[in-house]
Image 1 (cartoon, rainbow, N blue to C red):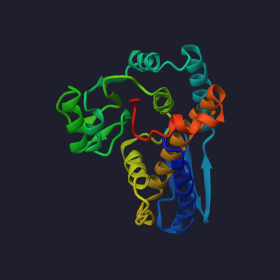
Image 2: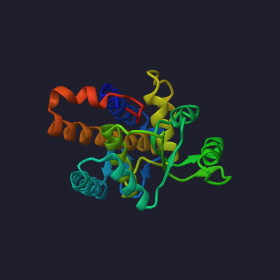
Image 3: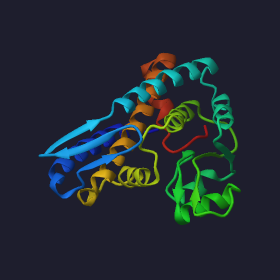
Image 4: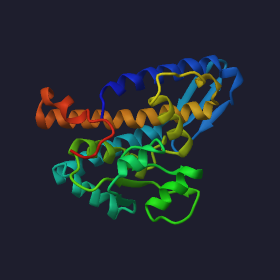
Length: 234
């Protein structure tokens, strides 16, 4: 995972705050997800997210215990995912198959439309224009820190943290993969909040992975071990 992405995420988060203030009078007055609510009133943004913050702490502590218990063995983490109801699929050319719909190996969140139909066909998940979250990887060895980053995101999804819905992830990938942020100002408050949550979830996964890697390998080796962007294989 490319650490430079953290800088991009920070810029996006700042842009989201600025744009939300600018567009407050044009947007819906409130937006809510399962664990938080954002309200706009008189150019002031109020976010009620006590439950989200509580769940973030639960995710952090739980993943720390799980990873320590299996010594960050990627295959044991994958087995944990499988036993908790998420489909795990190994495909010979997973990276190429996923790249055609703008996805990377690892956690693939819910998809809709032709993208969902496409991924359902390749993973033997039926004929539907909506897919469930699943883990998709190539055959072969799994890079431990890449897997750790993906596992953290999966656990956050599993515990119900926001930012993993189809629209939020679609916006996240759109602006993550392009330096052009033209059009951000046209999104609704709900879409902007969803984007902010998606950015936050990926940031949290990166922070956990970096800190864990430092504790195991020391800071000098961290970047070389986790900057393999978009690749689960060694």
